[in-house]
Length: 236
Image (cartoon, rainbow, N blue to C red; front, side):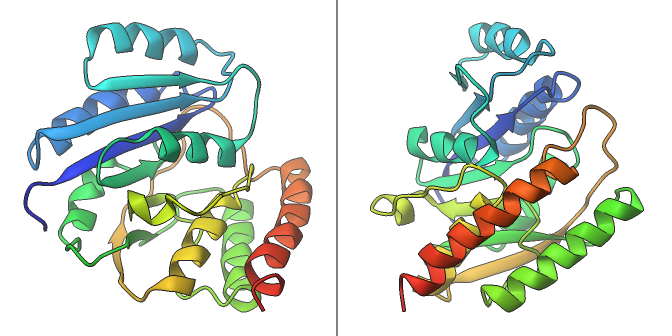
């Protein structure tokens, strides 16, 4: 674990009213054990379930929190990109706003972090989802390893710390869940300074997955083709 840690903790939010405020509070409580140099960012992707109103009220009471609002639903990738571009600290951590990951597991990633590390990526010990999502997730993970030669264990685990300035001169374009693929592949193409740690995964108690539905999966298929052109063909 590095000294004088400076970190932005970011949550994408889309209709996560049942979990997002708890995540913000847990993030503040957890990271304050390791550093006082942190901020919390929530990017709301045009929620309609009261999430937006809740996080705006929390922002007024919490000086650590900064809220970024989308005026339309722009997609998961756009929330991550906006969070990364607005982050002010040396390291950038993000995980989903639905509560399937425990923010307190960030300790496991921090223990792997050193000054040379560009990425610390979590991987799920067990996946707590319905069987169809487990199958789709495992298939997606396996295909990405084959098609994009991804080396990390779990590309589908949105629980990662990134050296923020790595992407200062890289334009990220993915608007969907393929943002994870784009981020990781750019890093793997440039460095081997990558660490991994197992983390917990929990059953979703609130809301619906924005990735594992068939309409979105159809769109993601075309996004994967676009990513293949950018990350594999265009660079060859």
